[in-house]
Image 1: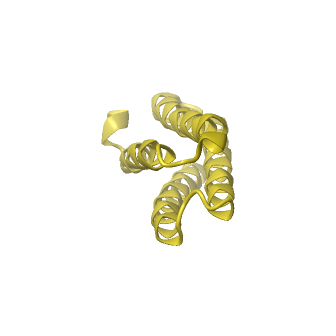
Image 2 (image 1 turned 90 degrees about the vertical axis):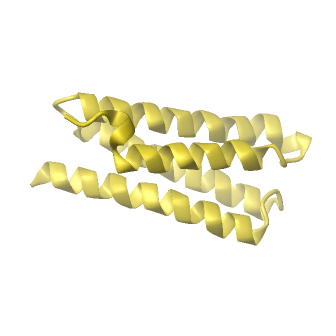
Image 3 (image 1 turned 90 degrees about the horizontal axis):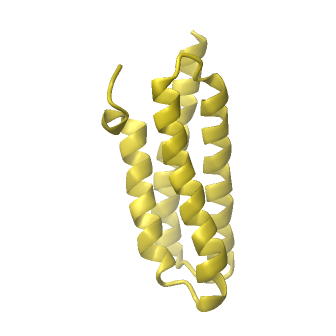
Length: 114
């Protein structure tokens, strides 16, 4: 079993978390302590779920929850773009990272069913 920190999906999620910490600093006060904190919390939870999935025999339930978290993160990021807290360039960049994590989680889930 690989260390969770060596998994590509863990590394991609950690990079996503770093990005989220960076750009939530720029949110206005109205959103920084609400959506900004929720975004950080969801992404930290995502990392925790990846760790759990890697260390368990039965990964299916944990991977499904991780996929749900990435969709919540995607929703928050879109909301922040629509509320003009993220410019379009940053939105595209962060969305690419979200998509990368999402695809890796989907691939991991599919590999489990084989």
